[in-house]
Image (cartoon, rainbow, N blue to C red; front, side):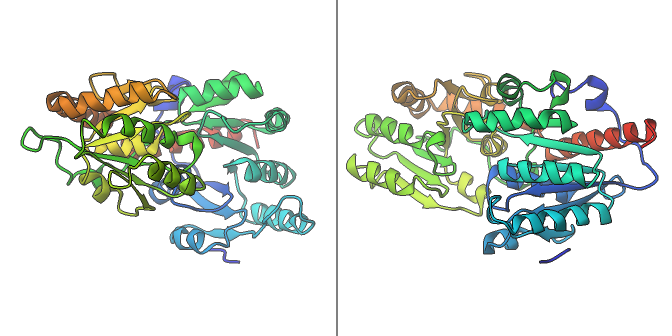
Length: 393
């Protein structure tokens, strides 16, 4: 073990944080770290928080994998609990250890990610006397079972807030778990724009555009099987097109069988995990997000920042980020024919691709910088701390 919106009220969204006697002490609890959207956003938030306003702590429910330890931030205390299962008897000892840590560090806010960490952390945080418990919901809850919904409703009375990263996720939570509407706020994701500045925007000197790219975990919800079907429909007319899919996940073998069965081995490539996302995006012209469900996609924000021509399904926050035929093309989910038509439009109309790519890049620069996201979180945390002082806590 090492110890190292928007539907939010207007004044909460834009109020400038004020400095208190000491920084707000917040502990983030998550299962473990990985190169995925939620984890990447959390690490970026920790890295950029103003330490004079907010003092972050990170606790990992498990945290014993090599990848998780490699991703641990160097400028933030880290506690690894090593709790592999909530049902294991030793988890009671882990709960006592975590409660002691929360009391010793005088944590003001405990923010919870993912189901296991939420169920574990909410009860421990309450027993440890943490004043504010915050849940995080960065998706539409497509994975929820009746038991998850029931447990979520049980947590409503002890949860100060739930943070969603888009209005679609907020509405899905209100419908499934019935919290008070004013206790669910939206804080939208941000992207590190500087990482993508060096990528040139598409220009008329580079057509024909035939290089397609996808960044996604290889899971059924990402709809990659739909993209493979669409590619099969297009490969005869566009034999020089290529599709590169960056990511890993449990659907890899099934996708590879589908690709091989359709004879697309020379067109569709599963690239595995890619650490250099800007480098990957600089080598494609068109990006595709065929998800069946989505919150606010980090991958989509990165593609916008890189100035790519984007096609995405009209799920979650995709339609909020992309204006159809202005900054990208939107298609319904689960429809390989519509997806193929959208890809064909960009393949045969470079001027449309360039116009959408340019508009998308300008849009993300204006509204979704990482700095703006961090300032929104800082305002949220300091407002909670100020409210705590106002009530004499």
